[in-house]
Amino acid sequence: MTDPTEKWRQAFRDQQARLLEVGVLDLEALRSRRRDPNTAAWARTQGSAVLVLAHADGPVYPTFQFTDTGDLRPELAPHVAALQDAGLPTWTIWAWLTAPAALLSGDIPEQIMVTNPRRAGRAVQRYADRYGVGG
Picture 1 (cartoon, rainbow, N blue to C red):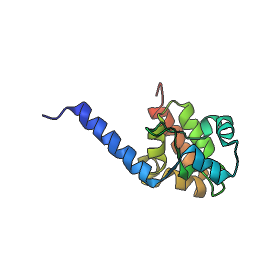
Picture 2: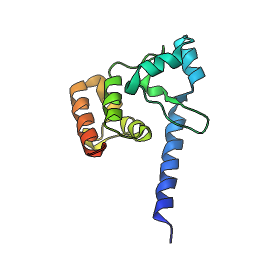
Picture 3: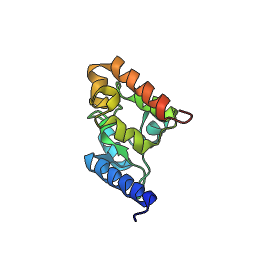
Picture 4: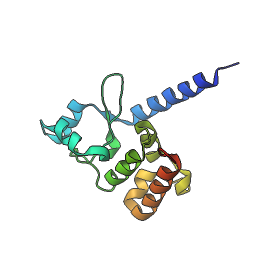
């Protein structure tokens, strides 16, 4: 019989691998995109609006949250902050924001934030209330 804990760990590792394939930036790559030698300080000033993930090679930043010039996507940043402030794990936030979500009838949250921000905001709040710390 397979250990259920090990099955969960393997599923989590598989999910992380799929997300990493979508794209991440390390600090040097983000610095290059932003053309700013003070990118580390900038990232710290963004607080919970920037999604930073712990990875074996060091912290990484999912690319979906940035514009082509390395700024945070303005329609996305407040929602990332709300989910992080609710205590959700960063990998979970990334996975939820970039995959079809039941709370949005199968639409992808980070895409709906562009086309229907009120609908996306309601879904983010429901998700945070349901799965956040104390939810």
